[in-house]
Length: 244
View 1: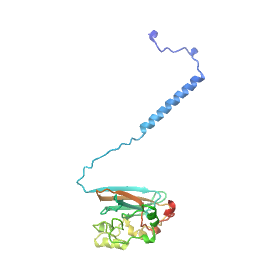
View 2: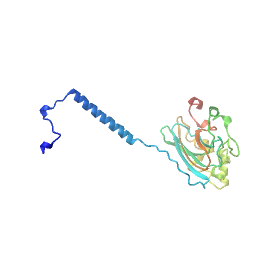
View 3: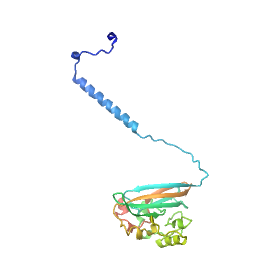
View 4: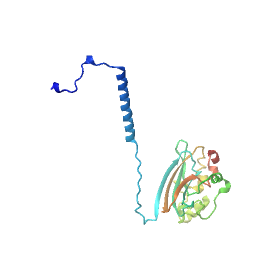
């Protein structure tokens, strides 16, 4: 059988190790390592696929949307949320449950949650400069396609009705037999007296926004940005125009 051996090994005395052979071996090992790492990275890379799904619920006029987003360095008193249609008009008759939780610079919750409403957000430099000014307050009885206001929440069947002050929203709740001092949150109209008086505003605050929206099936985009009518006294930080 030895006569059929096609891979006979040379005798040890006839093996000669050269410098070129050493370089060639190292280059081969490096090439193998590079190919292995490259293929491993390609194997572990996430593959993105575009998929189109046909809406099977065409007979349903409404849909539910859930949002849970955290901003590590954006104060809750400044951030607003709004729904806008392609004509840049507010989407009306939206059922909302929007809760804001203030976060410390370490990311820990501060104080009690604040229940907020949809709000106009700044979309250009002029609106950003105007935001927070004392003349920028909103006082109206009903929201419009171009103006949002503080909601009366579930005390009114029409989500676009306005309760401007803390006394207004609490009176509406009491009128309908609802609890006007909920334990888990405070109304945004009452946040200055109840939330920020107990835990003073800090520089570098963050914010977590949890929202559940019940909206009609219409073309719209969700905007999260600087509220055009935020309360500047509840915010500590540099001027918005300086943050560029």
